[in-house]
Length: 435
Image (cartoon, rainbow, N blue to C red; front, side, top):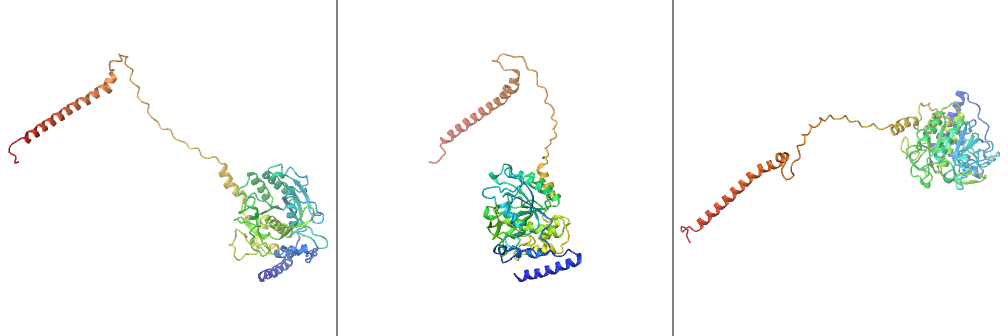
């Protein structure tokens, strides 16, 4: 642990103690079963790196519900037990409870995500444990590509609304579309979540999977987009990406997750960084039951551990810095009136309206043009061999008028030329010249 982290840890402990004395907070909950010597538990380096164990001294997420919209949370009693309190399938290919893993390749993805957010761990303190091990989970199963019978955009929109209507306080989305824009149906779905005071946490995406820059839903105003770092706190090359909407960073390298069959496997990606932050959001909402979603987000970014070489205040790789669970819970952060990650309603008002409003039709004032005078009445038809009055008026007579003077001029020029020639001959034969 660096000197800076030790100093921050000591300061956080003082703040927590002062908070308990000042506001009369409830007594610290009994220690959670936690065996740091257990190989699996010891591999969860983020529990100490993000000061999650310190946050557990105040809360473990009780009373908060995290919705995981993913490939489905497997039925693993030792890890999820009573954690999953509801679920549904929006893919058209899963089971009604949303607990059947979807996809031959990505089927375990939802279980990995859920285990990081709120895995229970074993009663003896061994095995994998999540960031908010007492929070509840909702499993909304979606299918990617051929694994679904419903268009993906429709699945997400429906899943978001279902999660809100079924009590989600935090929604985790560990996927990307690799496009900056999004379907208009997501406007309503995400706005519905924000209007119902739900925190929406989104993975930024991974370069190793072809995401060189963030894509929707990470580009939607108001969501908390999570970038990824390695064990040293350095932005990951393969297991993260970049973009101006990244708000916070969390571990994305050297992760572990529980598969649907109960096995613990290594993995990496911002798909894992996002549920770590979603778990922190659950801890905050548990410690501060009346806090608004925008203040949860603000606490996370305002208490982030700054990165020395990052652009301030918001870096395209790190956002505002590295997540600090203990500080996010205990620090004295004033409430805000606006979401620091943007306002989707305003975005819709400005951009969607501009796209949907009809373009003004150009109107032209007609110019009054006076009618032409009536044509002269036609003359009686005559012999085609004789010129008509019109042809004489407009053709023959003007031609004669122009031709006769021309002939006279030509004759004059010819006569003058002959006279000049005769004069030259006469001069040539005169005897006064010297030879």
